Amino acid sequence: MMKRIKSVMFALWICLSFILTIASGSFVILYIFIKGFKSVDLEFLLSNPGGIPIGTEGGVFPAIIGSILLMLIAIVFASILAIATAVYIVFYCRSQRLENIADAIIQCMAGVPSIVLGLFGYSVMVVTFNMGRSLLSAGLTLGLMIFPFIQVRVEKAFQEFSRSAINASYSLGVSKVYTIFKLVLPQCRRDIVSSITLAGGFAMGAAAPIMLTGAVIFAPVPKSLSSPVMALPLHLYILANEGISMEKAYATALVLIALLIIINIFAMTLTLWRKEVKR
Amino acid sequence: MNVLELKDFRAYYGSKRVINNLNMAIKKNKITAIIGPSGCGKSTLLMSLNTMLEEAEGRTEGQILFNGKDVHSISKEEVRRRIGIVFQKPTPFPFSIYKNLTYAPIYYGVKDKKRLDGIVVEKLKISGLYEEVKDEIHGSALKLSGGQQQRLCIARALTVEPDVLLLDEPCSALDVKNTANIEKMLMNLVQDYTIVIVTHNLSQAKRISDYTAFMLDGELIEYDETHRIFTSPQDNRTKEYIEGIYG
Image (cartoon, rainbow over all chains, first blue to last red):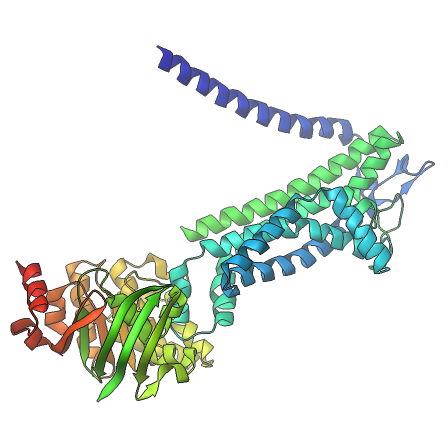
């Protein structure tokens, strides 16, 4: 009897947790959709913000472009470093100690709060390197934030790659570089691409790292890497925090969420596709 | 003629010695079988011969001479190209059959499509796979059966034109028919290559090898022509091992 009660309770707990998670997740998306849907139209997507204070009228076009550009800079910067680091740790590093130290540092980086990264970006890139509050400074700061995210996943993909296939390649007298580029990277491509896209979504949604490093209340679509930019999360923050227009804030949130969902679906498709290919 | 010669050879994993003062010479264009109980150092010996032991975090002392030259004086890549190895578990790359076989030749600079096609067909024919897979050469190598995968791996090892082919229990995961296929193939290959095979299967050693080496606890106990090892072993331990398995 006791056992039965236990198992029923357990099942109930699992079901409730599942329902709660799904429900709260869909609630957030649905709520934002309902609140924001009215204000999102083509004009909102394609025009500059206007009115006084700025944001009460017009759209978010520069913020959409700004967010996409920030994401691109962040993923290019972070993935080059992350893949190279993972290759080094898995294929070149001979010292277990160095490997542990590198892993520990990367774990720490993953744990640094994003506002602290923002402060770091501000003092190093904006002030010390004199790059100003710009697209580049903000993009690189975001890159720092997602670097550990990508590195950990890529390293895992490399670790899981069949050691015996790698040895079979070495035993043909083929160099390490050729093995990595022709055997390992192509086979891990989907893992790498999907972790980069997920990281891109993560970068696009972050407001804290870019507040101090390059995102501003209003700027036109950036003309160069050194121009300041608008970004959706910061725009949303300003609209809501300053009480400028809740209607526009929800619309902005909807656009941001839609972009993130598109990116995530893209990443998921890649991952699923990979599993099918493997079978 | 001796292709490979080991002099005072020792191998270690960390501080643990797994092969102890081994002296041995391997004859050209012959099949040499290495037999012995599990853990006696057979596979370690095989992997040392083409420096693959380094990849398994092992190290060696003493000399290995390849055609009279110390293998450490030749580049690792060159040694591995000229002394191919096939492992116990088939390890096809997750590509098509065709790409498995052109992987190494492309690395060595063969770019001409016709030559690559030629290599693929030739090696598939040598390994007896051609008739079985000729319609699906561009299909995934992972879809082949275990025996076919192993023959593909042997074919792949041959694409770089080695002088010596090392095989580490290549048939241990295969059924009788596939084993017979591989044995037949090895007996044909020995005209052009020197073959060293580690095997648990004494009757296999007896069937295909010209020379047999018996190892025990990291030492070479006896090394002679196969028929002599199996009919009149000099050392008692060899006799016991051979009889133990039979009886």
